[in-house]
Image 1: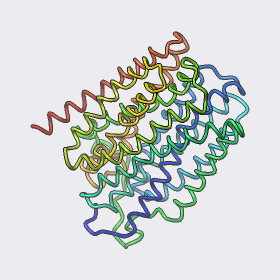
Image 2: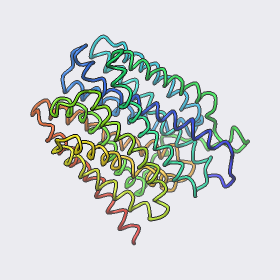
Image 3: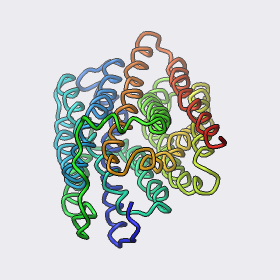
Image 4: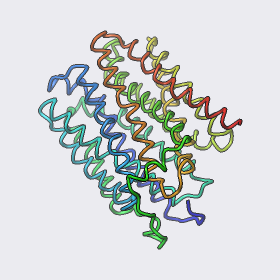
Length: 394
């Protein structure tokens, strides 16, 4: 990270955050429209889970190549390309006539969306000093909560009024706007201020990136993503099918999770500098284990509301201190590739959550067993957080 302060950094962060918001809206909108889509083109629980999972699977597959490309060609160019292809493939999903094309569209969305995070993570460290980078990551990470809130507070109403196809088309339009803003504004700091470019990277340099600290940080991201994917996929259907909540109420209740994710990401980034990142991450991982169990046995609106609040804190509190630590876990010239490895391992570990829980639900019709599975997966992050605390004390 550069020592000089640049006035361009907040514009860069703002555009990058909006792009991340667009990406997460594309990811999170499917569970909201899945029931309507299922009735229209014919989908079962296993197919719903697979459509949700393939996004994550192919998102993970492209992470390392995206990091290498970002180190070589610049994060801004790769991020802009990501948003353009994501918006176009989202239109394909919006007007799909059948399950097969819907699955193919989500594959393309995962591949294109997977380019974004390594490219923006390659871009942002050069614009911010070390003492404000955790906070910048907290702001960037809040995009996940904003996306979920916007999706769940508005899309159910849009679906009710105009249908699921129009809703997905609207999301694609927002994504193409992000592409336009990215092409206009996202630049490497060297391109703006004449700083030297990063060294050329190769896939053969991967062995330099697999550090113990990076793998430890990955365990937290695996846990959060598994929790996010699992809760987002099945909480709306759980409330609709088992608790009898109307769709709009489901949207409002689940949107609370998005608000809490926004707040938790920002708070986590600030707290890490005051009480230590390990304690912040440990709190997040403990909530990831406990919250799915609480949700499984919630019945009243108040209990479901509380579960949604806890889920938001569980999913995002870790973001700032975890992502802010990655540039220190690998050498500066390997930051893009480091984020690629980090996200590849994270999404390989978490992408099976929706598919596996979908199969469990199809076989048992038990949402309780689904949420128990999500809680069990979260033990990985809890163990990693305890190891981090012990390492910090040592």
